[in-house]
Length: 208
Image (cartoon, rainbow, N blue to C red; front, side, top):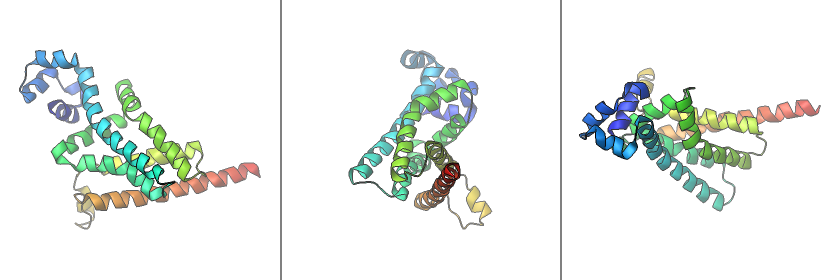
């Protein structure tokens, strides 16, 4: 928990083993004993949250497809709900992880790319394949864009910032998880259908 807060607040470069040990109430030797170095500790921090979120996604996908081919709305909710709920769950340190995952998922440095590849690419590939099962008219390029755009929207509402309430003069409430999940799913599905239509039009143009 202390490492997660430090990485979220200070970034990988700014966080120190000394400071993490102090905040955790342990000595530095104990951190080195269990995690070897800062890179390994960072990986464990990401793995703890990513593992929980991805387990929920995998279970939801298993259940949906066991019952047949789901609607696009049910599929997208299964993919986005765990991310949004994690960020809104303060009992699990959601706000700290929200800041952390947004940071490394939008970074091009080697460490961030490795974290994304190891902890999120497998579920991304499964999700993209699921989208194409639900909407066969999506080609691979459109399905990848659909997944990335949808996840980006979920990440943007993962943390409770209060900005939506300010901009809407109180009409939007980013503490209402169900409202946010519903709005995010609706927005994402509309965009995915637009991408599918574009893909079909482009295919027709090539055929002509």
